Length: 212
Image 1 (cartoon, rainbow, N blue to C red):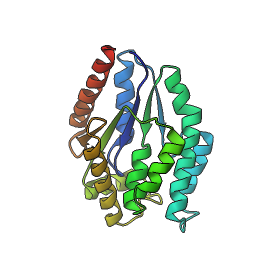
Image 2: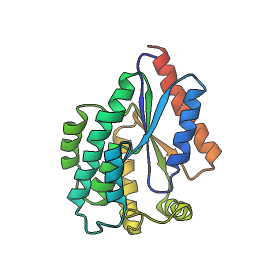
Image 3: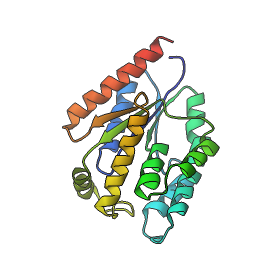
Image 4: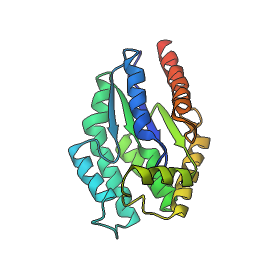
């Protein structure tokens, strides 16, 4: 491998990111590839504290702009403390959500638009983007049904269905714009089928890296 790769998983609630990021880590390990699993918001001590603020119920009147800025504050620390050092050390990074989520949730869901998010992305990431993003796409009704069976709803999961329809549509807009990076996977299918599709995407990136 010429260098470590940065892989992100995206999707609305109930898309199956948690189980599939574990599958990817195991798939890579079986091929001798060391990886780091992390998540957003979170990943660091500061990021996890911000995650609690963002997902909890102590700040229900949080402004959309505040939410966006806290997401990028957590991301800046995440990049500094976890993501960049891991990549520099040759470890692949597997992240449950990244900046595509900001475009989908704050840009489309909260209807803030993409211009401000793009400026924050430039400032915080300085050109770093995922090498591969797997968008686990599910209909909103199915995703929310799955999420409801998993745990009590967080601050985002209590949003109205129309919010999640905008988020899902936002993700699909991003995928249409960057089809080489963002691969859409129908996550409404049985888990084994979803993981076969993920495996195909992973085989492509590993084969590409094997050529230099």
